Image (cartoon, rainbow, N blue to C red; front, side, top):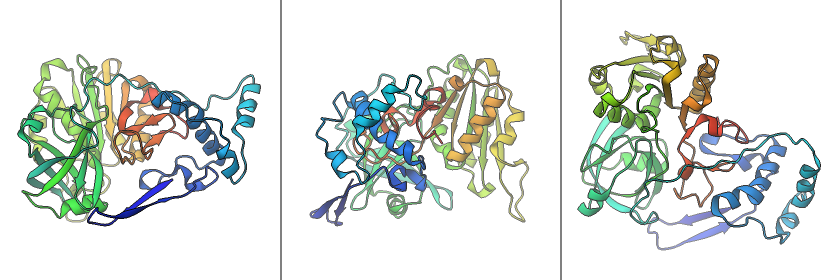
Length: 387
């Protein structure tokens, strides 16, 4: 692995290289300290499939030149040749991996994806005690005029001298002249962003990734299921459907939060309820003493009995904590929905945004470029599990 240590002036620093090993428990650590491959054998297979298959698939270049360095440095002296021979000797090997072919990219950034563009904070709106919606505009009017994006994609936001973070866009491209991000202050970059004021400058790279399948959803009912901050990447879907209401069928919005105080975009709920043939259902895990609450209490799946869309002609879009999406998917599958109908957003740790650093890799998938939105049927069999 490689770690860069740079001082705040960005004028000097050092790069440290270190050996990592699939023998170690933390080899598959991703966002929020989630270890998606706790089993050692699975980590070994993941490393070898990446070297011999996934790298070739993603970059059209060999991931192994046969030098033997990996065997020499491996603390267990594992020889990939022996493992491949064993796999080939098994007449019926278990299907433990699945190749992933990402869809063709239709819209690519017009600008250099490595170079941040200056953007000014036009306004800041407090959503909850730790969540704010920032309205940005590029300093260069030509950049702003050319900037467009699909619902569900993300930008890399830089706070100069601190770092950058991948954040989903929470506005719809129909909003001209500006764009919005709804951000929770939880890390170095987002906490630094929380200290900025209107008129301050940040860096923006993007947009990156594949978003929600709004074109495929046309002519169908839509079930939107969100939890907590997961409503932010789904808000563009609501805005998009609202502006093109005659192109979609019934629309159910199910949104859950831990407490009423944690609900986002509360000032927009009345507007959403006025969208023709649209139903908004709210739920919270608990209600603090003295707080009035006239809606459901329980996890978001307790709202599923209120679903009015036609299961046989509908698409599901869901975003939230991994544990929430896991049970949303499981419950829907039990109710007869198919994996082909369900789309999820995998908000795993992303760093570079152009599938070079490997921080967001999950089996053959780079979330930053192949996602963050995926059809569940395409990723349900990936090694290590999706959630």
